[in-house]
Length: 218
Image 1: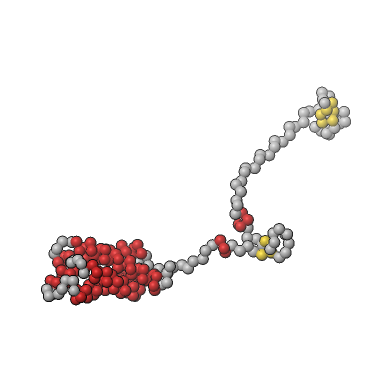
Image 2: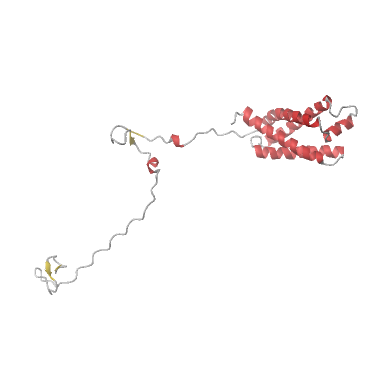
């Protein structure tokens, strides 16, 4: 077996004390350097090609032709940012139709059910028919006033375009109005519950009318 001289690199018989060529003492050759560590496996990204927006050929298969930038617009959906700012004027314009619609619903309710508002109107005018057209007129007037009040508050607090918050605020205001009627009549506070439902419906309608009708929201 032959080994290379560490000084000149010539081969000498294993066991020779000196190199026949350079005369230097034979020493063991340094061990080979360790093999470099294998690189860690990297998970392949299937979208890596889309991350590169550099100029690409029109026909990648041929590799020639003029280049162009990749069109990344199809990966995004453009939507208009909704306008949610509101003021008292917006609240009043939405509260009027909402009050009229809620008044129509309450007219149907008071045709079959006597509540605190009916009792209060009858106390002021005993000749009035509890289920007649004059009572329906009072109902429409009351809900129109309530619509103006709730719409104004929603516009003032900038909650008109937020259905959940608007409905919650309308329920609170309607409950307060119903509680006042119940206090004036003195027949318990069941009218407050009716007021909560009435105010919630009215505020929700005002929010929908403002966002869908006046602002063209989807």
